[in-house]
Length: 552
Ligand SMILES: [Zn+2]
Image (cartoon, rainbow, N blue to C red):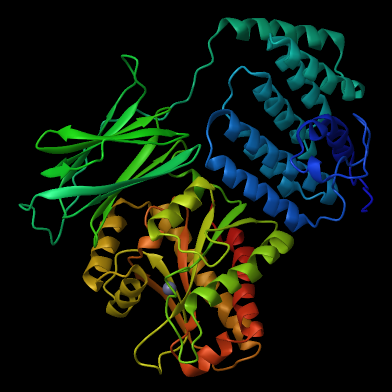
């Protein structure tokens, strides 16, 4: 049993304030056997036992991921549990990143007027102290919140929090001022900051399409989370499409629609969804089909197409598109081990499969990222399972990742090809790079080029620059790491091409081709745990160097 030694005043205050809720909703409470803890005591409550910090982080991420698949109350509860686990990690190990993460999780909850949401709000405020907020300012904020709150349970909760901070109470006349302020605020409606209701029409080029051919919608796949969603519409042939939005009204919520020219459909009328995206309906539109997305609230959106097979991808987010690249801090990372399940990826002359090596590298990197650089990591797959390419970036978006790293091993019919390269999604005139993308996409080279060109026109400069920065750091880190043992490692640099897996990722993203599995020497090295560890270390070292390289 680890003993808890608080390392700062703010941590003591935070711990004292946080304990009651920890007891109320710790997700691990069922595993607790011997520990008992009282409200407000400076002890770590419940089942904190011998878990390592990365176990906490993994548990919190698991809860957050589950939450992203739920809606309403269930999602709310899971997000809160994830925040509580992060908080436990903070109390146990004193890493501010955990407190920060807990605050983010809590702030992502919808602020309705339930006592559940009160708990979350108060908890988020309390954690601010742990993040260095002045306890006197904290007292003022909690006091103001109590004055504004009408719900008796919530008021009680706030009074308890204030009691813990009684040593930091400001003078009486200041409290009177705050009461007056609360009265003024009660008279003015809070102004919600909503994304714009633009009804922009976009008609991207279709470069190689036979636009006269009638198209059929064969499948509509929603991947929905609380704050993001992706809908993939599979269409048999390339076709023009237009995008529009409809504001809430007449008993309906806000809607986004895509009109698909000359398209028909069969057996695809309504797909129920959850969270931000409530429902997808397919119906007749002007000269074709109309896909309507019923939304819980107005969103930012981006619609693009992927060739071969032709599909429209509709990405939705409650957060402004640039919010992931503005932040200097790297807190969440998605590692995407390529292939999996029935898709082995490339296979080496020694029988080694790309899917297994990629997963092993991710498994080696993830705990180091948590332990050494305090970055929460989500794997798009944790086991040998097939995950569609379209779903991988959607998972990263739902996780609100700050960086997306797809892990692969290269392959070439010329078995002499070797070296390390990192790709970013961008327009490319590099035939060799397009070949790699075509292989990873299971598409033609022409489709990879078309995708790269189409997306480079709609992508943000900031995201692209950050992706290139990380790619170059990763190349450098891989060179340094591998050359510790092998002085013949070839640095093949940063390349640009069109990868489906990176399309629509809301954050900087790269695709790492760690070595050539088709090269007998590199395949032998990839077969060794040490070599795969050196590749995992490269990712960790690049992540460590990344924030310093970002411009303001
Ligand atoms: Zn691959």
